[in-house]
Length: 285
Image (tube, rainbow, N blue to C red; front, side, top):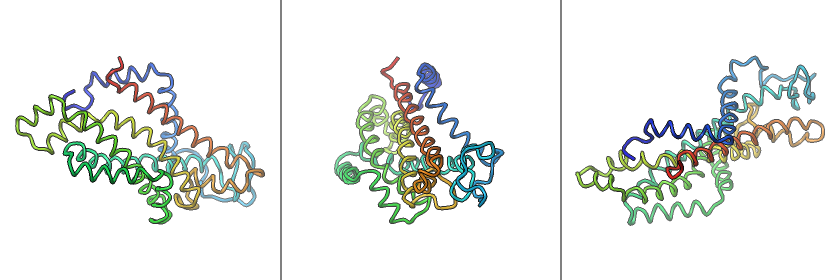
């Protein structure tokens, strides 16, 4: 592979392989559906997700409230759709933070080796020794309860995975002939890393990022459930579950719909990630 990350012919091959995978297509459709809901939330003809009605407290699904109403009469469907924005944004931005912090560290560790690699690897091992969700909760509690702080906490907690993955990929790629050739003609370290190594380790990073989005969405829901994520009255699926836990017998629909949404979007990202792993594998034809 040359400097180009994914040549046009390779992109066409990847798309053909994705189309031949029913699971990957199902994942793509699920993710696309929820992304469309999140993007179109401001223009969809739905109720105000913050509007309350004391005459519509905990109403079951009906023609007026398609998914029912919550404990203070807010429309669950509207809050579900607007909550998709918070949950998906948390997943994507958290992974972006993990990528932009983890990939450079892994790249430097794998390329230079020696004491630089030892320091970064021991730092990564120390972070990986702590369970992901426990670290995210601890960081979110330290930073303070808000969606922004929750995204930072999740991103930093996911960072060690990308450091380790990037380092392993760089160790495999930096001995390739085209890297040795670039080094022999006098290119600097930054040029070699940015033009010859990084583009050729992008596919596994894409796969890992897709899978990590699912993990980040669960983490954001967990933090919001604990009161460390999206703050009331703004909707998110995790905060909706936090309220719903008090009314499981009187109004089970308050928990069913956000729980089902989290389940579906996580399944969608996992199916899409598995499909991308197969499609981007150069050993598969």
